[in-house]
Length: 94
Picture: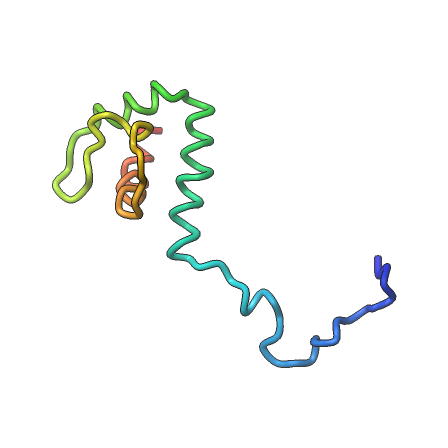
C-alpha cells in the first residue's frame, strides 16, 4: 500500500529494533488473564452461568487445587493461583 512513500522503515538495518522483539507481552501476566478474560467468558456464553458454576461446584476436591464450592462466578477477586486452579479443572468442566 505504501501510502506515505516509505517502503522500508528507517530502523530496518538497526540490530534489535524490531518492535516484536522488545514489545513482547509479559507472559506471566498475559496468559492467565487471557484464560479468564476470554476462554471462561466464551464458556459462559456457550454453557451458561448457572451450568458452569454447577459443574465447578460438583467436582471432586483435590489436595493441591482449590475447590470452588460456590462456583467461579461468585468470586470477587480472582488471583493468579485461582486462575491456575480453574485451568486445571476446565477440561473436566467442559
